[in-house]
Every structure is written in C-alpha cells, then in structure tokens.
Image 1 (cartoon, rainbow, N blue to C red):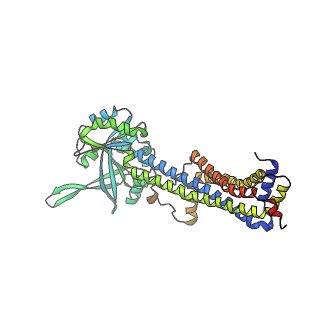
Image 2 (image 1 turned 45 degrees about the vertical axis):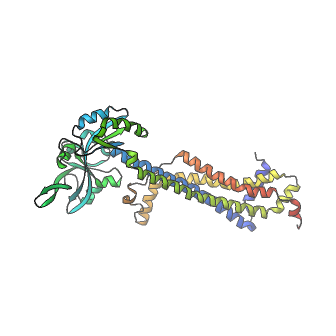
Image 3 (image 1 turned 60 degrees about the horizontal axis):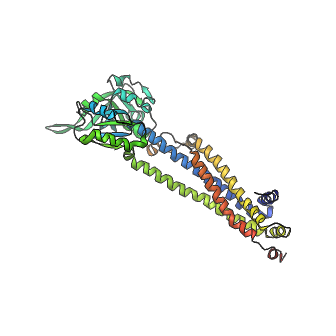
Length: 414
C-alpha cells in the first residue's frame, strides 16, 4: 500500500530538525495525549468492570438470586413450601431464613446489625462466606452455641471469638411501663471477612431456631431465599415461583433489589467513557495542527517532489503516514501501559498509600477492601480501534491539503 519512497519521506518528516522544534513538540504532545487517553480509558473501564463483578459476586454470594417475603406473620409451613419451590425448573437451592434489624452492643460500644437466621446446611452452601472465615469455626454455630459476625463489626465492638455481644431489637415486648426493647447476649462463634464493607460491618448470622425464638417467629420464617442455575433467566424462573407462592408473599429478584446500584454503575461507566474519549479527541486535533504546520513548513519540499514526478496520491500518503504513525504509536503505548497498570492497580494503590501515609480509597465509600480490576479484551480492542480511527481521520485534511499544493505557487518566490 505504501512504497519504500513514501515511507522514507514520511518518517524523515517525523524527525524534525532544530529549526522545526515547535513541530516536534506538537507531535510529541499528540503522541502523549493519545497514550494517556487510551491508557486512562482502559484503566477506568477495567476498574468499573471489576467493581461491578466484585460487588455483584459478593451481593449474590450472600443474598441469593431471588427472595420471597411473607406478607404478615411469616411462612408457617415453610419446609413444604420450600420443597415445592425446589421443584421449579432452574432453582438450585432454597433457604428458609429469619431476618431482622438489631443494635449490636459490647464493651460500651454499639452498631447497627442485620440478623440472618439460617440453617447450618444453608450457611455451608455459601462458599463466599465459609471460605472466608478468619476466626473460630462454624462448629459452634452448627451446635447453636453462638453467632457469626464480620471482622469489621468485631473490631468496631472490640470483641473476638468466644466473647459475647448483646443484640437489642426495637420490636420489644409491651409492659405497663411501655415498650421494652428485646435484649439477649450471644457468644461469637466465628468471624468472617468477605472484603465487602457493608456485609463485614453489619451481618450477623444466627442459627435458624435461635432466630425464631429471638424474633418471636416460632415455627415460622420471614422469607425464603433461592439461588438459580442461570441468573440471566431470573424473570422466567420467577414466573414459576410465583405460581407456587401465590398470595402468601411477594418476590424480589437480584435485578430489582440492586437496580439502583447496577444502573448507577452503568451510567457512571458510560459518562466516564465519553469524558475520557475527549482526551483522545484533543490529541487528534493536535495531530491536525501539527500536520498543518508540517505541510506549511515543507511547502518547498512538496513542490520539488511534485516537479520530480511525485503524484498527488504519493504526497497524500506520505503525510497520511506521518500522522498515522503518531496515532498508532500512541495507541500501542497506551494499550500496553493501560493493561499493565490495570493488572497491578491494587498494588499501586497500596504503594501510594504507604508513600503518602493516607487512605486513598476508604472501604466505607467504595464498599470493597481491595481495588478490583477486570480488563475486557473486547473493550481494549474497541478503545484501540477508536483511537486509531480518530488518528486516521485527523490526518485526512492536512494530507489532502498537502496533495493539493500547487508547485508553481510554492516555488514562485524561491
């Protein structure tokens, strides 16, 4: 497509001489701009993908894909109902649970807690939880001897395995003196750390029978939690579950439960993509400005080449190659730098925090204890193609202008 003569002249024009320093500076800034734009796009997209994947994995790893809640006093014949739900096509596990909000207190400290009463078998079916037990064992939980809490709650209350925490429920009993909050102490059987601030700081897992007694739901549960084989078929599976549950309760799937969160992530991701694309666009305009200056500076050379037999097509390709080389080089460097940075972003975060002695990304704000990153090869290809495409488009006008230069006019006053 490009002859040896065209390549020779094009790359010769990239190496500006001393009197052409401004042209060289503009070309360098164009390359740096494309490099930074491509690298930043890849890094941001990777981090956004990582956040979405990690958060959904942790949310669904503890909450399941679908939950049916009882309307009034709970599901009484819940084992029979759970068996009928289990028979629905696509359902993998069914877990009767008792949930309730409490205040957890110990050592003069208090924090909000979310109690989840579950059976041992259903707790063990959550590998995200059982695989991240960092203190104690689940044996005490299985024997009904204690509760399981997150490490952040344990640190906040100043307790460890074997210590007791007091749970206070606002749904207290009514006495002559008014409503008295229900309070009871439970030993801590184990602690877990799944790496998600909200769960590590608030969840309290309790044996189902103890939770039924504590929340006065004897012989009943407040909800039935389900996991499915294919989360993308959740609407289809939900229709079958609705037929089983009927008027006993209502159903919430993972999409509706986390709709605000998922939509916010998607909107933020799209906005960041558009904003960061402007960096590449500005760099493309720099290519236009730099090439126009090269064409103006090389007007005499272009005229001589034309008088020696060079065609307009050859001149166009020479300057097209000149600008395209900047775009391709910047894109290649950006892809390499972006992928490498994204792959080591949490290590870089830890290093920067150690260097500055500050917490750059508090877990309370971003909900994860680590900065996740997942690079999508398809997105990398799209970003690279977009950057190269903009670079190629930026070279068309200056190259066309060089090809249209009249040799007579260029050499008139030489």
